[in-house]
Image 1 (tube, rainbow, N blue to C red):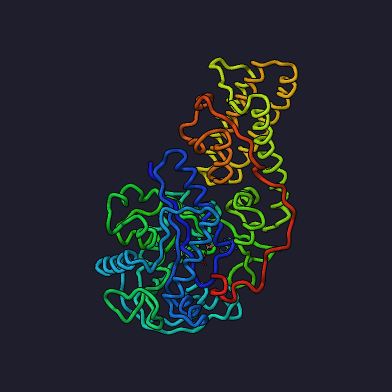
Image 2: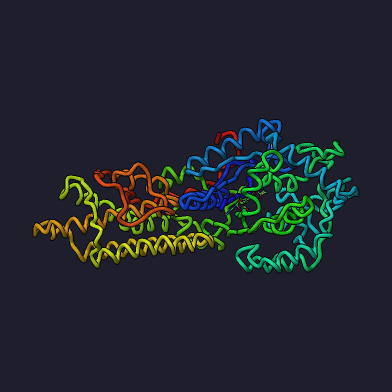
Length: 521
Ligand code: ME8
């Protein structure tokens, strides 16, 4: 089956930080995992480039909006590739096919009678790019950014969101897994039950946006424009073949802050277009640093490039998904990252790899012994554990339980370590017990081959390195891996440590970062 996974598209009003990188790494891990099982997978991420917020940020840098977003979007693209995030497409809402997509969607909704003209007056938070009711603000300040909401009054076009209330409630009722985690589904249901108002979907006071095809002095509300990227990204307008293969088997990974846009407005827009709702919306938690939420607005940014310099891509990717369950908030503590690197990566997986390869080189000139078809009992237990781990990790991944998937992989590492200690291959070598030593080294090599496949989606560099040092061109695929069926005649090679031991370093929360975007580019 085809799998389609998306992230929010990010506002390029400032350089990306660890929080904005997080959902993109999650989607990358999920996409790599699906591909390893042979699923045709499409992974979409990108930047959300229109609206008042971007217009203001460009002004502050003394640039016109387009050159400004070109600069910052490139920064996102670059940083994502630095963390080994490999989307099928990095979409920008200024891309020509997206401009066409939005115009076409607006025309279709207007023709259906779902868009009408009116005026809007209300309190607007420019950071959220949304209007608030007075009672939703505290002392006139936005509940998310604590900045003063501005009073805006403008002619605008409305989308008949309120007409979709009952349909939405029915959708949630029929699909209790539509929003995950479950608690967040309940929030959405309560919100919709309390009543929906029509949505103002155009701005006449903003010029940086996609003009409405039927009223060109208005630009499209940035959220209405942005949500449609998910259709542009699979060729809704052009190649109906790609669209038919991937829609609606889509998972939208988003932060909990933008749940209503995705779980309420987006399915209603799709319904209006005659398109099926997405399969699932997965809301993740927020990272804080020293208990403070870090974001573009709170004065500090966690600098991803500096984190990679200090710790490397794989330890960072591992830590983010091992430390905190995906739906919950987490505190980014560099001491914990160092500890997990040293204990779980360096001493756990790293040592197992290092000592197996050293023994292969020392006792067998690097030649990996071929396992006989007949299984010895203790080896059979390791083989069973390996196959069980693929199954259980996959069951967790299908539910986006990244942490639990990693835990089951590390339980397997513990099984293999126990096996090594029990057989003590070094004493088999001392005793000259050659065939037993072959059996043991063959078993350990197989276990590592499985581990290369299992860790690659989380840590692509380490997975590839394990495979290469075991004489394989790449990490094997999880969908086709079979115990004892590895190519024969392979030669293992010693290498440097997979995960060097780390020391804790100075914190990377730099309050001065982000004040100038250009300085960072
Ligand atoms: O909302 N911890 O873009 P955005 C974890 N353009 N995740 C965090 C985070 C943190 N501290 N801070 C941000 C937008 N995020 C819109 C989306 S989609 C059609 C349009 C993540 O640049 C989180 O996933 O403000 C959040 O939803 C996303 O960044 C928002 O990024």
